[in-house]
Length: 603
Image (cartoon, rainbow, N blue to C red):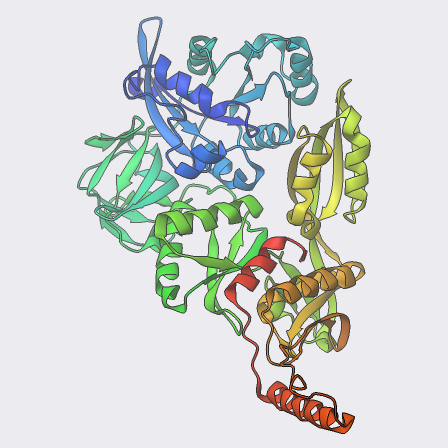
């Protein structure tokens, strides 16, 4: 190992959402002098408007800093990570590029669900963990209680725990010294063939695909011809450099360093996150072990509001996938909505963020269908088929069993709200696996629960029933047999595939009633009665009718024989019947948008 390599420290900051991670990163940038006071702004590493508005980190960001300890200069590479459970994939990518992790805990909230999940991820990767209690300058806080939490839950000693304040900068210098002292220098052979891990990427219209890399072995210089293991693509490097936090060009990147490579590749699929970069001439024999790939949990159809925008939506999804490797999509066609894409997301927040980014960054107006989960269908022939779109469910006569995904759900909640949270969970077809008390004021509940129950409104209700104090984390446990049915919506006898949903048999009638009553308000009246039905197979479970627009044909009759009025009414009735036979009901886009945004229909 060279002397320069011994002075490199690669670390990330992991925490539960809203524990002050981004604010602490700002103070680290200030303390190291990486960003001068004139350029400094809040949430320096959050460069998306969405991140600033919502106060969350969505994309991992890397930044290189200089720090001196006992007169010796060190190079620190900080990789910022998101805290929300939906962006756990970004965290796993950051951890794969580091040797150490700063585990941040808010002194006023203590250990929460994502704190534990991220800590276990870091332990799995074999990282050196530095526990830090943040916001210690808040009044009336119990430091001893949080220390006890860290001791009991994660086994840290008191002398390992550091105290900081991201707001005032208290303890930041001590934290940076601890990173130098505790985090090991990167291992790797400078003389070996190049192997660099791509942990993130973005698309630049002038430089093509820009890969964010951590050099594990060897070195890379401007003008080198590189090769990507997964796709066998080759490219001449146009530019390389580091982030400080803005890009700064360099001649070469050495073993252990973190930076970027401008590849000039124009196709987004050619450069995959998790892939290994090597040189075309002096190739490495084995790729680096990749971190676990993203597994989408929630699926929804995305359709352009105007069919003319379909090419624009396809282009936008291609570019967005480069910046968000956890997004997956494939083309699909709906009778009601036309051409669109079936997309997989890590969770509902991820779905919301993707919709917002498509609208803001690419100007595409889209309709999203109701979110669903991936079911496994066991057919009578013994085959297993994955179904993420309710419209693709096979014929009922060919189905032996339908299995739905179940999650291990961890909830940390103040003791006074345990009863309300348990009542909520019981209504979600869940099973309590374990209940423990982290300290006298907080309990940890572990449940097994179907994913379809988690994604609908569980998080919102959890927050409201715990007055905002409960925290949630979940991971896939496996697939179990489920009594679920396909609920179809028929308008004027015609099925509307975009509104079809898979629901548990017990909830089918309630869900059907909610859907048809909402549609009755939204579908404009026609010249004939329009029946709206929710059906399971051939059985209708709920029905509403949009009454016809009717002209008063007997208004001109003043007295006289009743048979004349009857004749006019019968004539009108026959005309309405003829209209109904040939009439087509167009469901307006606003109706789709309103129904799909109600969240009434769990799937």
